[in-house]
Structures are given as C-alpha cells and as structure tokens.
Image (cartoon, rainbow, N blue to C red; front, side, top):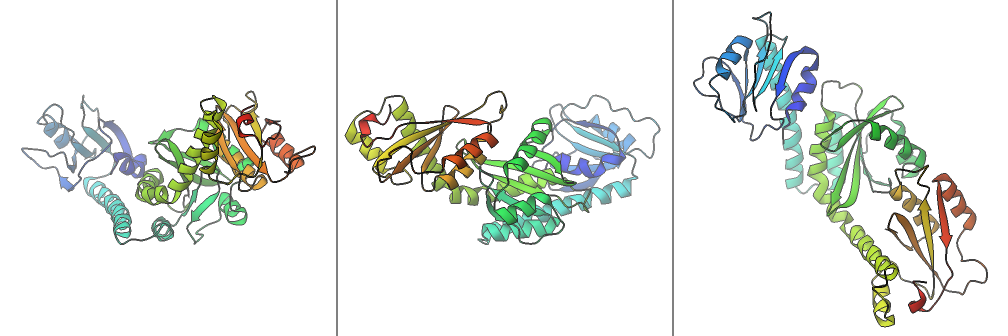
Length: 380
C-alpha cells in the first residue's frame, strides 16, 4: 500500500513546510492539478499553487484526508494553518516540476508493485521474485532464516557489499556481523518494522517476517549507492509482504517442528508429562529420532554481557555441532536433547572443546546432565 513517505523521501531537499495527517494513501487513482474545484477527493493527489491550496483547503469537510503538494513560487511566507487529517506539503519547486516529479515517483512505485503482483499471479518462485525485484532497483536482496543462514539470494551483484560476500562464501552471517547489525538496529529508528544500518559504506535495510508469533525470515537488502531518490525501506516492506506467503509455506514445517520440540521440553520440565507410555509417544513425534541414551545440555547466556540474546545464530551453530538433534528454547535458555546409541563412560559423544569455544564466543555457559535410557527419569 502506498505510503506518502515514499514520495516525501525524494522531495526532501525541496520541502519548506509539511503537515502529515495520514501517511497511508488508500486506493490511489491519480494526480489532479488544483484549479477551482468545488469538491476534493481523498483518493487523488493534488498539485497546485500555495495560495490556491490554502483557499481550497477551507472547503474540505472535517475528518477528510486530502493530500496536496503545493508550490511556494507565488508566496514569500509559507505558514501552514491547522490541517487536521489532511496532508499538506509545501515545496520550492514550481508547479510543473512538482507535478512531473511526483508523477515519475508514482509511476516507478506502481511499476514496482504491479510487477511483483503479476509475478506472483504467474506462479513465479522465490528465486524468480528475488531477481525481478533486485533488477528493478539494481540492488542485492537476501533472505535469511532466524539463525541468519541464507535461504535465497538474488543472483546478480550490482556493486560490492561485505555482508553479501560472507553470505555467498559461508552460507550464513558470522556472529560478529550479526552483532554489529543488531547494535546498529538497536539505536536506529524503524519505519513500520523496517530498520536501517550502514556497514562497510553500504546501506542495508532489514525487515523481519513472522507467522503466528514465530520468526520465519529476515529480508536483507543492500541498497544501490547510485540511486539516492528512492525510499528503499517502503520498497522492501512491499517486497517482503509479497513473498511472505511463499516463505511461510517453505518454513511452516520448520516452525511446526520447533513448536513440537518446545512443547515436549516444557511438559517434561514442568512435570505435566510423567507417564512412560505418553512420553514414548511424544518422543516419536519429535523432529529428529531419538537414540537409546538421552542427556540434556542446558545453555544460558550471561545476562550482563548479552542483554540481547542471539538465540537464532547460536542455534544455527549448535545444529552443526549436534547434527539431527532436537534443540529448542525454554524460559530464555537453549535446551539440547542429545541422544546416542551407546552408554557414555565419562562423556557424551560430542565435541566438548568446540562447545566451549562457542560458549566463550557467545558469552554463555552450559550445564550438561547425566544420560539415561529410562524415560521416566528424563526430567531429573
């Protein structure tokens, strides 16, 4: 849906005064030059002289939302009276330049949104949508899972970007890069959930997609340095909304598996699951099959050094250390339900040194429980 900030971004250097009563422009149908209309319509934008705009504004009923872009070429003093829910923007451009500029911006936006909708209706897959969107704005677009692992990326590189190099070489963002992005995002302003960061001289825009409160993916855009008059943030939001259903379909199985695992751990920890037969049935439903001997690894972040807990990126690393293992989050701790075929003599059969390095890197600690093959004793 068109947001007036998309146009204001490109006019920024020419705006003298503005009053924004409603950012969303619904059911937009076109642009009309102000003359002496007896009635102004909410689903059109008006372009005219400052004096005509203020005169016609007096005819607007209370509660209406009229959008006017006014040229200040015929006045020296540009004071905006109380405007209620209306959008009034006064610019230094003459009326013809103002009309042409807005018209070009709107045509570009309509081309963007219509192209994405047509591609979805034509049944294009995620890769095709990525390349289409990236080509229209000559920028790289990446889609990451909650652990910052690459799900998909546009194929063409229009300019160098450091995060893109890491994603293409490693298949995921290293923790240092994730931490830098998080630090910048914590201090930056957000627009409708879209945040902005600059790394290595490149502007990045990020938008998170969730489904039923579960994080599904992060869409990351490296914005073209050659295009300065486009509101990349709103374009990214549009693109993310367009591909969200495709991503939800692809990631729904993962989300469902996470929910099953989390529910099992919660019921074991809170003693609502105590019968051997019932536990056995629930174990069969876990995402990964269990071997005869079970043991828990409980990982807790240091509250002082890690106020923002990087659950996703650490779980991504743990997946490599504990392949095909049920891992979830319970009460702000990460729980690894490790299992193995043979009874351990001293230690379980995973790399303790590698786990120690991970814990040190993420400022976390681990408690490693004893193993058992008795389902009833799983909780203790």
